[in-house]
Image 1: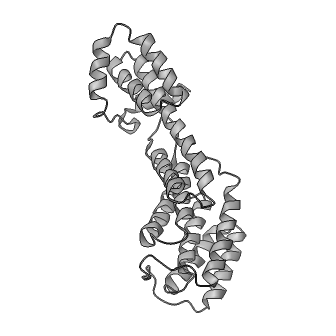
Image 2 (image 1 turned 135 degrees about the vertical axis):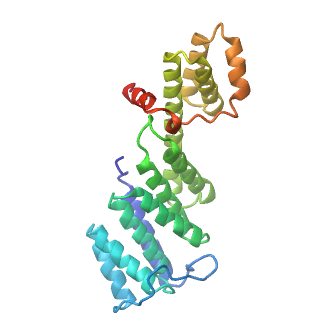
Image 3 (image 1 turned 90 degrees about the horizontal axis):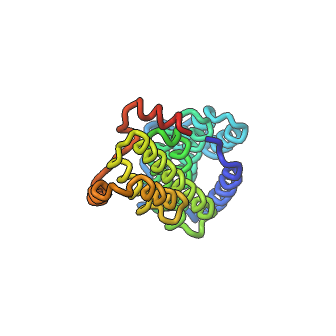
Length: 265
């Protein structure tokens, strides 16, 4: 998925704010004030400010592998430094922007979120968790877990950090994710209708009406019910009684079904 153009601008604003506040001691290293060494405990043979400068130059030059290595040296070699958390974040950013492994980026951001729950940078970290999960999303015919996770992180930024520079963008992306989930549900419902699996189709359609009443997919689901279930009240009743206990996921569907879903759009 193509990265949003304004993400770089938001990222630069974040870096400037973090550097300014850290320089004046306004940001703590973690919620408890304690930072533990990560894995490497040997202090590099270079001053932390020199290492930070070198890492930032590599990062700005988009030499992300080099930048990541240098930020990790700063993080691990100077665990009590005021730059330690920044180094963790920038190492995670280097993973993300290298486009190599978004799962690894998620793990890196999640570690920061758990280790520093009160840190000033949490709105950015949660936003990047949303972006990383969104990058892992492979389409409507595949596993929807990454899309759901992305939506949850964007929702957290919007609700928990409404005054952050990431709140507005997170709100828009949350709505986009929700619409994509609704489109997926409608696609699967249509597949079941085509296969004349009416109970499964009814569950999906009723779920869309319940969970997405404000979206056009909700109206489409209502039309589908009126068209295909005029004389199937018993199926609708059974579907309605079991809708809350059904957890049909595209990841559990056979490969043949996923192939047909993919070919339908």
